[in-house]
Amino acid sequence: MAKIYQTFSMGEAQYKIHISENKLDADLWVYVVNNRGTAGRNGLWYITNNKLEANIKGYFCSRGMAELIVYFVNVRGEAGWQKPHRLKNIL
Image (cartoon, rainbow, N blue to C red; front, side, top):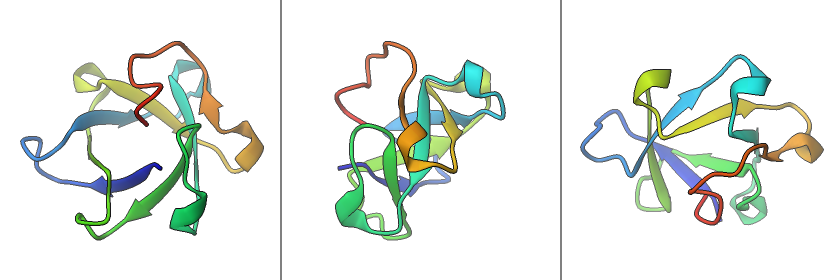
């Protein structure tokens, strides 16, 4: 499950993530779900304010620092990996 907590400390983060405005630049297209039970590894993220509930702590940063580039989509069916990536089986 992809339950994401946004941390503001790079030291606390597991992954550094950049949010792109260009969908062609992104490794992963993400759709934000409202129910933690529907989050998944194929780009369906549940964003939580509770760090204990999260399984991923992400630090949102500039493109140059990022390990992962995401683009947020408005349609659930568009979510998913767009490029081969080492985090594919993790997020």
